[in-house]
Structures are given as C-alpha cells and as structure tokens.
Image 1 (cartoon, rainbow, N blue to C red):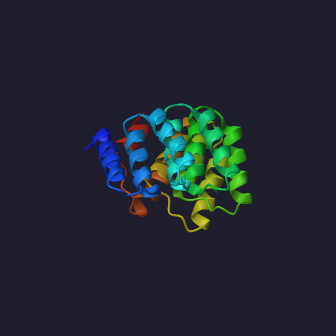
Image 2 (image 1 turned 60 degrees about the vertical axis):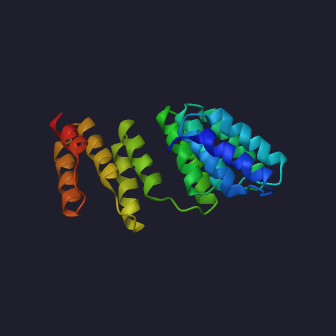
Image 3 (image 1 turned 90 degrees about the vertical axis):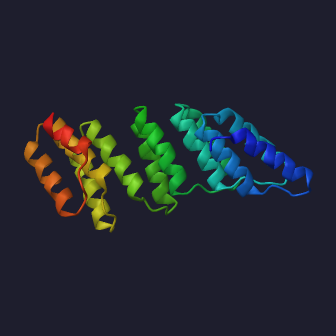
Length: 206
C-alpha cells in the first residue's frame, strides 16, 4: 500500500514483543524503501543490520544496488558490490544485471564488459535480462554485428528472446538503415509468438 513507515512501526512493535526480525523482515522494509525512492534510508537500515544479529544477504544488497543505479549513483552501487564481496557475500545474476544496466545507461560500456567477463569467470550464467541489456546497448552504440552475435548466442544457449530483445535488435537495424534486416527480425518475432507492441511498430514507422 506504500505505507512503509507503518511497516516500520510494525517491526518496532514486533521487537518490543520479543520477536527478532530476520533478513526477510528487513529485506521487505528495504525493498519498500527503495520503491518509494528512500535509498538513503535503506542504506542506513543496512548499516544497522550489519551491526546487529540480522546479517544482510545477496537479495538485500541487490535491492539496494538496483535502487542506487536507478537513482544514477552507479559508482556507489559498484562500491557496494565490492563491499558485499569483501564480506564473503557472492553476487548472483540479478546483482550483475542491475549494475550492468546502470553502467550501460550512463555510457560506461567498458566497465559493463569487464563485469560480463567477471560473470563468466565466476561461472554465473547470463540470463534473458543480461542478453537484452547487451543487445540494446550494442545496437545503440552502432555495433550491430556484435549485437547480432549476442542475439544468436542467447538462442544457442536455449534462451528465448522476448519483446524487448527483438525490439532492440529491430531498432539497431533501423539505426543502420538496414530495413530488410529490421523487417526480417520483426517477422521472426511474430513467427515465434512474441506479439509486437506500439513501441515495435513506432520504430519501424520512423
């Protein structure tokens, strides 16, 4: 309902009655705070947890990292990633996706590529979101050939592209004035049962 402070009061009441909040309780509050743009308050709660008996986990760190990236604090998100790893908490594909998306949004593609290599070294499998971020960024940077290779790689790995991935590739073809490729991708999208939306059509019309 967006009543985060009501939730906080409930946790305080819970503590008074002798119930110890666990990482799920705290994670719920952190998630709620991040959703209403109170990332700073969420970080303060994280620091309290670190001092108490309730140890933060990868989900909680990932939630704050994602929120920092959305708030344009990508460097701070990278610092938090380093901090969690120094504490022995290993990032997962969700953690990496949040930061890779943040880096790509702000033109820091080289750092994103470094994280992709790090994922490979840690044997963390790229998922649909990782590939979609990759295809979109490569297309926007005019690297259509590399975007197509990433697109083909995800299919080879058994990951079905979604509307977002197809539309990014269509946009990439359009940016390079390769309309045949754009329509071929559009038709492939329809054949695979992935319904185009107004955004897909608008790109082609433009």
